Image (cartoon, rainbow, N blue to C red; front, side, top):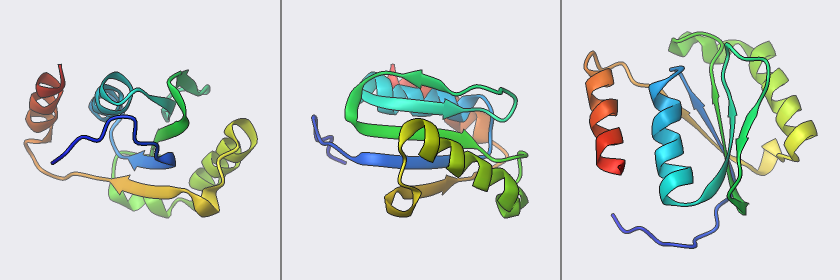
Length: 120
């Protein structure tokens, strides 16, 4: 894999299942390594959190309503998130790359922690 520094990606939305390690990993990669702006919305918090970086490369990381894959069918929840991203951060959801990141590996915590160590 090749890392292209100063590559602008526009706006990307990552929808994750977890509530802790996934956010830490995304911060390490997109903020600490690549210098992008990260918008974070965790299901257990009311407010969004923004880490400022490159204003032309913005990655929004939100988690699903619950920590299982069936919660992506909760349209009201995701519709609310989309509306908030559009209103607060001018995210054009129709022209944004959206990725769903789910893992069901029973060793997922160990894998994520090892990935975090590699990013340090």
